Amino acid sequence: MKKTSSKIVQENPDVRERLLREALLLFTSRGYAATTVREIVEAAGVTKPVLYYYFNSKEGLYLEIMGGISQLFEQKVNEQQILSGSVRERMIHFFTGMFTGAQGNLDAVRLAFSIYYGPPQGAPFIDFNRFFDRTLEIVDSLISEGMECGEFFQVDRNILKWALVGSYNTILEEQICREVPRMNCDSLVKVLNMILDGVSAAKKG
Image (tube, rainbow, N blue to C red; front, side, top):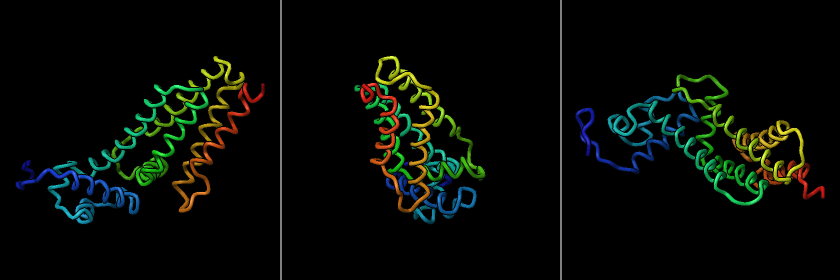
């Protein structure tokens, strides 16, 4: 137990998760700026001191939610670095890992996109560009490896990189923007394989 705001707060993981869940739902439906601490605690069925105990503020809740996205991304990056197999297999695994991770956290991803593409709404700054830049770096490195080992033909690495990442982003945005997406993870794999078939030495051989 810990004392905060002259009240005793009992540690409860369920309460913490409920606060995160309700805050995320409110942030995505009403916007970060329009959502108040009062609305969050009422939706979670707790008092303000409980929120302050776990997260200190509304900003703390937001940072915790975005931190979850960051941890998920880093997990997929780490998986890619230790994975064995062909360059194509590792490339597909990286993209599908990020995709299924995003699918499992669509509300948080929607919130990130709304803050990135729209007004910041007074939310704490997060460098969302680093996720995209890191993705480009990883894909570029895999393409370079594929060309060096003879798995891919020598082509314009930059164009191939943008074709792959651009396709991934478009299909990801389909999940975010449409109630019933027209593309899914299987579709993503087919698109990526179609692109990679065009530079595959095995296919041409």
